[in-house]
Structures are given as structure tokens and as C-alpha cells.
Length: 346
Image (cartoon, rainbow, N blue to C red; front, side, top):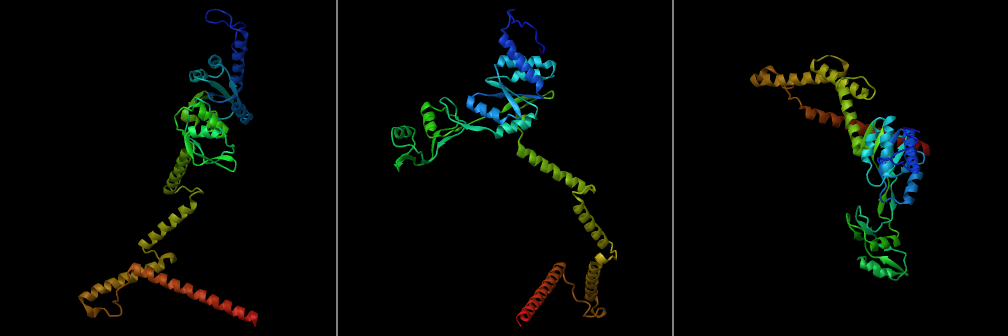
């Protein structure tokens, strides 16, 4: 036994029924066996849906339904071997079940969210969102159901021996209570508008109590944060010139551009910048010649004092030359192909 006496007594000193003692003992054994313990609501979940959820979780976790009193007692007594777990008893409210697992509870909770299922509407339930009867063939033959649909404001027509709904119709708005008539009609039409499933609203894992957003993180937000952090890390590595594989191409390109600019600014006569240095020197010489000619036209010959082209004009001229070279190359290639074809056909 785990922290249990042979005879359990109530506050009034009366013996606790054996079946109740066994229930708490069973819960304690399970809590001790599994790494993480979660609390989930089971309100509105039928036996069939719960069985499907148990099947979906068969390799991941077990669901244990019990009375809240037993669950609270078991959690408080489990403090002796799982420090801090007794706080989980404060989260046991309403129709509750335990989810026991050896997996990460956050990962398990995301799995539960993805495995929620559709269920029929029940009279008295609150609609979580607008419930719509879609237009189309109901597959139901004409009869009293036509008047039932009409009572709910659902327009119909009879075609090919079946009832057709002529347009999408909202029968219950979000937040409204589902009436018995609506529940019956939805069932006849095979519409299951309610999403049911389990969501842990609190969990114990390795001495920590997790709640709310801790158990259901916004994955898209996390992806965005990770992407932003990656970009900031790469920028920092680039600015610090950290030689890591992710930024080496950019780092080498940056170093090349800085070296090129430095060589150009100090007029270092290396092959990579010689052409630009000559062009710069030519432009400066022509500019100086024009200024001298303005003061004394006789000192500078006319052919020297030709105004230097602007950088924009120079780039444009180089582009035109390059395009002309490419055009000539293509024409030459085309001529060779034609010559080759002529030789082929004699």
C-alpha cells in the first residue's frame, strides 16, 4: 500500500467503505507509475466518444475517470513521492478525469487538440458556433419532416422523390441553447455540429504545474519567434564576422566588397580595381582640364578638354556595348547552326 492504513476512518471516526479505499489506492498506483499527470474535463463527452479517445491514446496515455473526491485525495497523498503534485487537486472541478502519461504533456495536449471529433447535438447544449443546415438533398422522402423543417425556417422543395433544402440556413446562432426540435432535425439530417474531445487544462510534470497557454502554445507564434531569433543571430554573426558555415558566403562577399572599396579609395594598384582607377583618373584629369580651359583656353588643346561622361552615362554605355556583344555572339551562333544544317542536307 502507498501511504494507506489498514483501516481508513472518516472525520467522524467511522470506517471508510473498502471499495472507496480501493478506488483511491488504484489512483495512487497509477499516479506513481506515470511521469506526468493531467486534469481534463469530460462534460458533454459520451461513452462512445470517450472510448474512441481511449483507443487513439492507447500507446500514449490512459484516461482514468473517477469521482472528484477520490481524485483530490489521491493527488494530495501522492505528494509523498511527487513533490508539488498536491497543488493539482485545486484544478479538479466539474466532471473531471485524469490523463496519465510518460510523454511530454504539452506534446500530448497538442495531440488531443488534433484528435477532436464531431458529435450529434443534444437538447440543452450551448452552440459553440453557428449551426447551419446546408443546401442540398437530404435523402429523406416527403412526409411530416417537411413541416418540421418549415417550423425551423428551413426552405425546402421536393425533387426526384426526396426533400431538398434550397439554401444554407442558420438554425442556431453561436451562444444560443439548442432546442429539442433542432437536435432531432439535425440528427435526422446526419449533421454533427458539436466538436468533442479532451483538453488538459492543468498538468503536473517533474515538479512543475502547467496551465493554460503553457499546455497549448501558439505554434505559429513560436515558429515566427524562432525565425526572428534565427535572423537576428545571423545578423549578429555577420556583424561580428563569426566564421560559421551559415554565413560564410555572405561574410566572404562582404569582405570582398569592403576590400574592393578600400583598394579603390586608396588607389591601390591591384588588378581587380585597375580599370576603375584608370577611369577615375581620366575623369578627374578631364574635369581639371575643363576648369583650366575656362581660365585660359590656349593652355589646353581642344581634343583633351572634352567633358567626361557622367557615371550614369558610363554605365549606360557599358550596358549597350555588352548587349551589342551578346547580340553579335547570338548572330554568330545562329550562322554556324545554319551552316551546319546546310552541310547536313547537302
